[in-house]
Length: 575
Image (cartoon, rainbow, N blue to C red; front, side):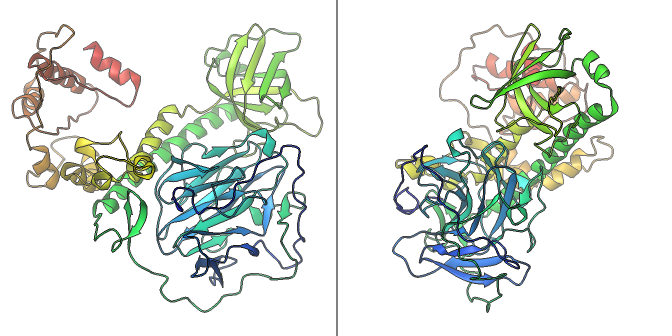
């Protein structure tokens, strides 16, 4: 979320000197101590409340002290040099919260200077005072896992155990060697944190570990840390009023219902359930894709992978850590033709001795093919180092990685749908914050809060169950009184002026009775929304093509046709 006139609270910005040494560390952890919220690196507006009674999870809230609307606190230990580390933060009361990582010399106004990176509950990420939309909104009872990959200098997030697709931030190489500390910034939210996974944190994925597990040389005490000041968090008396008021999302961020003039957002619960339904399916697809790659790698010889054009082994290599460029070549033999490993494809790079392991960056990293010229393959990678074994003189293997382009595209669109303000967004955004929270990609029929959209999102469980029974003899008959049926039967919005098609329209194709009935619903009855459903080979594309041609013949257009893949659009265009 934003604060302080778009600056998140008005801390002073610092200028990064690449030649300046990192600050000296504070006092190291003693026996029985664990990473904690740091009372010596905490603004007066944050009240540290102690343990929650569940492991080392501890709670804090926005206090009454401090002149800024926002206040921040950092952990007393950070991480440096290598590894993949994480901590978890819960929003316990609702309201505005920002979570991320920062260097010791950053201000406590997370995300407002060049030393800090944060992700807020309004689905906004910020660094150096620049705010962009990212991920999903989060609020009361949501758990956000904040992950730092020092091998790639990248920050990613998980919401309630589900990965938000794509890196939130990547840092330049000038940050190498600088310790980064967990950092929370609150406006009115009560929150709790866990640095060791206790207290019910969702399990970590992709090889990440809790920062409390970081070894000596990686775990770095904050310069202000004092040893022996505190052991494990002590559980204090429960604070009253943690449940707090109800919050709604407005064009200016989270506000109480009273502050928002009684605004209601009944559609939000159904919208969240709709998004969860499809993201869970995407997660299964992602795991299946990874397992398919691992099965090929583990069960087929490198010769078989090479013959199929999806892998090659025994390559020598050089790594330019400045550019992230990896150059690979065969010694004494010719590089074979690799039909599937081409420019732009994502591949896995591993040592021949170490094998392939998705979750261990010391064994396997991802890279993108920049070029294949002669017997030389050039890759680009975001990682700080390439896989290596203790023996040295490693040879490398390349394997075709999972193809997740379509998966990530759909996932990002679902995130965009979840964070959309719907009918509550500013109709004519004027200032910077309204424009930031305005979604021009979602409008019309599917805008959350619109009658048809609400009916569609609320109907997902019922329609999903019906879709499993595609045989009309087994499926329940349509319910014409259902909300989605009533709103779909409304007349379409029409056109403001006739449209003249710019291409030649084919003559009507012969349709069977069911296909003709679907066509008439759209063209004659002018239903606002129609679904054409059936198993492969039943003429769905033919029917859709006939509908498009009918629109254009009656001067209604232009028509936007979209599909899950380019091939789907090609099939319609080919009709």
